Image 1 (cartoon, rainbow, N blue to C red):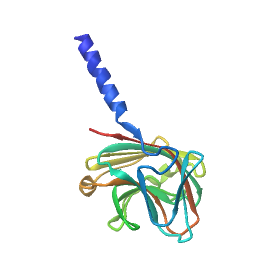
Image 2: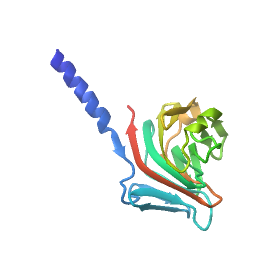
Image 3: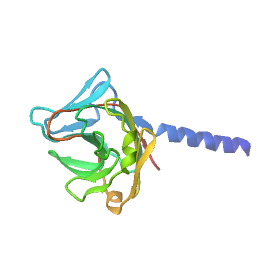
Image 4: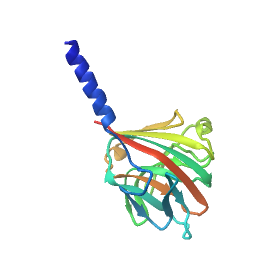
Length: 197
């Protein structure tokens, strides 16, 4: 019986870890599609988004759709770091449908959830949680999306938990955003996703 239990535990552990995969290979944008005219490129193993001459919104979306998952990534904001991570999203030109977990300069609700071209802000973190953001340094964000519920963490601090039926019905990609207005540069690395059963 002990051998069977151990075998089941090992199988479960293997399955759990086997589900995690790298979304960014550190070499190129394989597996992603660029939307808009803003700059997305790879340099020194990092994924970089930077405002282009048009200073408009831009997106980099996974070619594959993800429904229930845990996403972890690291970001470093340089200059104006107004960006975001979209979940269950689709992009047409530079119009996005989906939900953004905010990545922004201090005081602008990093970790909150915003619905573009829809209801706007759905939830913002409590103001005191903003101190979790390290502007100009590497930050670790984790986003868990399971059914109707989304939770975000920033550097180990839980920023928000939201349960919303509209999000639960969503389908689409993971997408990174660059905000309009120009002067924005954000670096990304270690973008990993683990699908949930």
